[in-house]
Image (cartoon, rainbow, N blue to C red; front, side, top):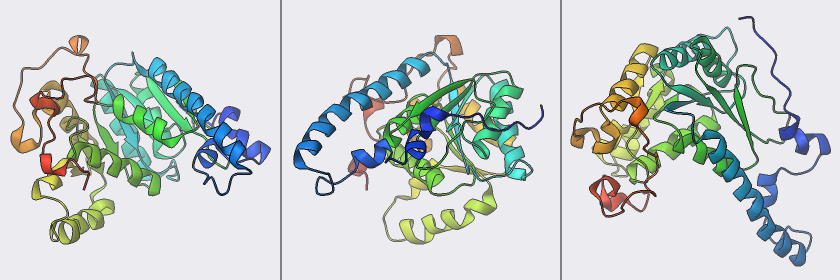
Length: 295
């Protein structure tokens, strides 16, 4: 398929076109900066309904997509870059293994992943976000959901993913990486796979984990097992498929996982968050109870 330009997405370009703040800017605005106390008191309570609406739209659109994997990475990666090819191949292999693909819907690695989903003829989802500048959606997205609030969008990435695949990226990619690691470490979500692709790119960060975080006792040795670093799309997919087929996420940290009989995909209806389960059950106990404060 020939390269195609991004689809226009005027819904998410309102702020840029009208030269007004984005909804995230308005939400996070200090009361001191608001035009008046009365405006502040009237705007924030009503904004809650818009936030509720975004959650409802996201849940409604994604509730029946089936097993999927969320892929993150830089929006600035060009089409002819090896990382673009690797992301496309990873998504294609995941699609052939039966997973849909979720991305942020933009260019770069996101486009590559959605393109790989198209190659495998599986569902290609783009969760786009309103930004202060023009934001299009790549032409390989089948289901596009527009968000104005980052925290609502991130909930969708986590809730409907069986795994995260993290390609080289910037602050946004780091945000998603550390969001996932924090939720897993504190037991807020099951221990689903987090695969970082690109060992040369991630080496400095992993070395810092060991030399600073671990050396100073900020994390525990087993916390380093929360990520898998690889250069191989095939290896990334194998890790995810093995975990899914053996329900390894239900068994806690790798050292504590209990191997279980594979469950047919059609019979699986297990949400990624712990809110729908008995909080007293072993599966809803943080892997390390003393870390429940999100250290």
